[in-house]
Image 1 (cartoon, rainbow over the protein chains, first blue to last red):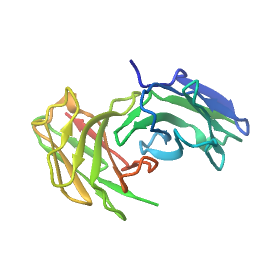
Image 2: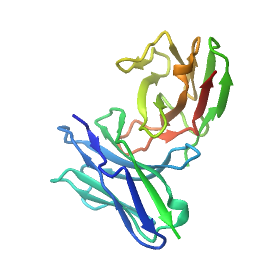
Image 3: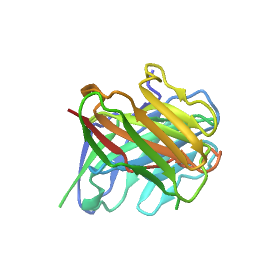
Image 4: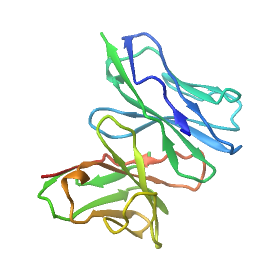
Length: 113
Length: 117
């Protein structure tokens, strides 16, 4: 079974609009971390935001926020006020207790003018 | 912030050549480094976990004799693709964590595009 599921292969959004990228996860470990990374066409992996399983509040980092719904095991990324430079591949990832990162298949986001 | 340097960024070489890729943590000590492989339009697949001073732990299906990993210091891990063939062509990317803490992100190098002719 997939541990991280990203159901949207591609998403389109207009500049200045908000967009939500979906991510659901599967784990039986009570302690885990959820991460979002951005990968532009150049290939580097850019860390965006982190949510711990015990965190009470949703994580926010500038224009990025994580809509964490623990009971539903979802950790959607919300990008507000999209910019052209946001066009990239976005990966959701999970780390279980002291373990390695497991990545979803990614969502390609295209921001249009 | 924490920086991971990966070198070279691109390699093009003939079949049968061995290729060495270096991964360095520039401003922190990394007891653990990770090596991933990414095919076009696919996700990152973990190949192995590299621990300083000990043997690497390889994921199922990854040939340890083909992909040699050395983690000789707290700031350097190397991946050597031995006798590379066209099917080894891929994007290889390393990452490292600076603290053994669940909420610390893995910092990634910029990756190496390997093309075997």
